[in-house]
Structure formats: structure tokens, C-alpha cells
Image 1 (cartoon, rainbow, N blue to C red):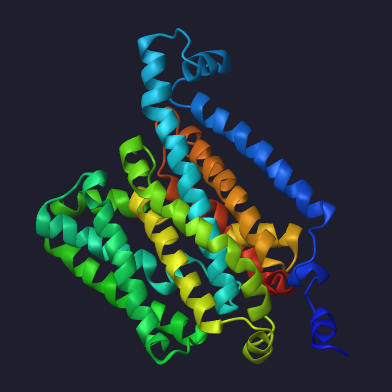
Image 2: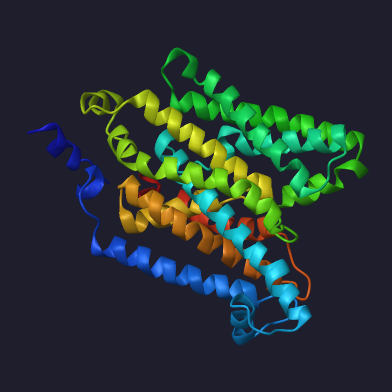
Length: 353
């Protein structure tokens, strides 16, 4: 029996996981997901404190005549917010899929490597040290904090020696998150008024995120996605074990380092735009895996589509649940994600990667 045939007999390992074509179920999920995503984008542009008809939305998007109020609501507020939701959702979902595959932990999400805590710590420094409270001002601090946290965790996890231990990465990420969260808490207590902006950012919010904020981060996110998607094949082989993966010609160190870099940019970019959004990176890869099986190539691709779907859904609910006001989208994603997390814990089959 060859190594590949033994691999395909592993529980939970689908035959296409080593590079065979996707099933009709997977293709259907991708096409249906794209259609649903487009419909949700239209709904996101139409729904708000006051409803706007789809004909008006279409006229505004195509350069037709609309009132000044409708034009500002559509092009000035809702289109940038929808675009931000798409970028943040894709970033969190793909980074979560990479984390779960890399650490072999089905409950992993971007905050597990300390990325969110690193971003929050840097934003806190920007606010208390430099008086920066505008999103366009502190997004670079958030990205720098994400890189700082990732490098620290990677060094503790053994990257400097050429061998990256996923378990050590997780433990280092949890420890760093605890330390940075404690420092942020101490700073908040010392000067509560200064941290009003930080409290809003930590709740996770898309309102008021103009195109200037998202377009600043979007090129980095796009580059990270282009790096992440080709990693699926290497991650498939890595799941078979280090020895077999090395025997099949996969560079373990390169695959892990590139995955960590992609996670950093994606999770850091999402945090820079909207703050720490919980559960998107946890839930979406499991939904993608339900359609794609163990093939990480398709899990990553479906996550890139399903992430914005869940993010837009949470954002629309956030606008309607306390209408005409709205809730932070981070709170809504947590309300949706908590029951899903409990379900995943209770269903052992869902936790198998």
C-alpha cells in the first residue's frame, strides 16, 4: 500500500484532499455563495435607519439621478460600510481557516495567536501616547501591533530554530494576549476618558468607516489573500504529519512561515478597519469544511466567500435589532457565534479536521 493510499484511509480525509477535483457539492456552494454575497451587498446598501428602494440604489450606483440625501446615504455611507464588511469578513474567515489548519485546532481563531491583543495594545498606545482617535490615524498602529504580536509569538514558538511547534504557538499566543490585555486594562483605569475611542474600537464597529480607511488596508489584505490561497495544497500535505509531508517534498518551515505571515496581515488588517470581531474566523471555516471536506484549497476559497456573507448578515442585523439605532457588529457576531461554539463543542464530529 502506497503512502497516498494509506493517507486516503484516514478518518475525515476526503479523496480530493491531496489535489483531486472538487465535488459538485463544493462547486454548488461556491456559486451559491457568490450569488448570496451579491444579494447581501445590495441589501446592505438598501437597509439603514431609513429604507432606500433597490431602484434608487441602482440609479446611484450607475450614475443616475437621485436626491442629495439618498446619494450621500448610498455612496457616502453604505457603500463604504459594505466594502469594509466584505474586506473584514474575508480577512477573518481566511485567517481563521489558516489557523485551524496550521495548529490542528478546530477551535482556533485569529485572536489565538495574540494578533487581536497586539492590535488593541498598539491602538491603546496611539490613543494615550499620541492622542490619535481617528480610525485613519491608528490603523497603522493596529497593523504594527499585529506584526509585533506575531513575531513575538513565532519566536517563542520556535521559529528562530527553524522548527515551528503549533502547540507552542498557541500557548505563546494565549500568554501574550493575557499580558497585553492586562496592560490595556491598567491604562484604561488610569485614564478612562482617553479610552472612549478604544472602547468603541474594541466593540467592533463598521459605522463611519469611510473608503479612505478600507482602501488603505485593502491592498495589504489582497496581497495576503493571494499568498494564502496557494497554501492550501501544502496545508493538505502538512495534515498528514511532518515526516510524510517532508517525504512528499513539502517545505514545512516555508508553509508555516507563509501561513503565519498571511494570518498576521489578514487578522491585523481586519482589526485595523473594524476592531476585534469575534467568532467569524471560528465559524466560517467549519461551514466551508462542511461543503469542501478536508481539502484546504477549497476551504480557503469558500471561507473567502462565506466570511463576507456572515459579516454582512451580522451588520444588517446590527442595524435592525435596535432600529432606528444600531448595535456594534462585534456584539452581534458574538451573539451569533456563542451558540455555534457550544454546538461545535458538543458535536465531536464537527471538531475533526
